Length: 205
Ligand code: URA
Image 1 (cartoon, rainbow, N blue to C red):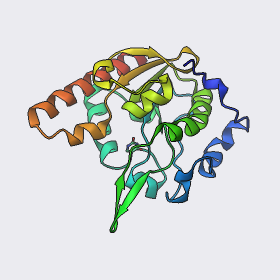
Image 2: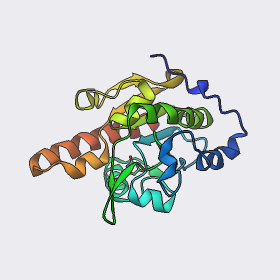
Image 3: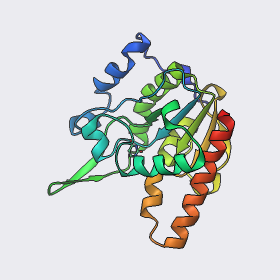
Image 4: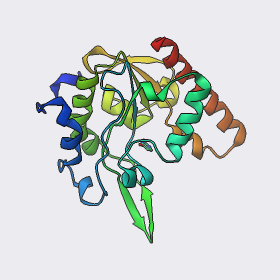
């Protein structure tokens, strides 16, 4: 599918975009989440970093990548020479999707209709920032930005065309690194993630 960043029908003033995202009721995910989490970072960033959806801690804090996945991202970005503060950081889906198990909220992967509904906001954020490069972390970000989510392990480290032809560098999701059980395999996945972040850092230099 040909996706366009500028297909988003949201045409309000750009400074009102975060508030518009916070007020979103476009899909049922807003019913259970604490709040929507818009992107943050410089509005003219050269690099846009895109994850899947807010996790438990992001849902409570209202900010992207502040929990365990964010700490993993920050550590490896530091090792790779990638400056998070200079990037715009957001998620393909703005509300936390979970099932309640007792007091715990267990993450559930967003499905295609939710990703499709939320592309409205993803596109508006891309149109606002107009980055030189988008880093798509994991299948949901890749699906939102390129129309295809399958095959991330084979696609990672490569560049594909995203909205308005903006290059999208595909990489692993930092939560994936936290879940690889075998230590050697985890180290290998971390090395791949580090190498992709270093590639993004070089492209920003
Ligand atoms: N995982 C994501 O994809 N995004 C976040 O903001 C936090 C965890």
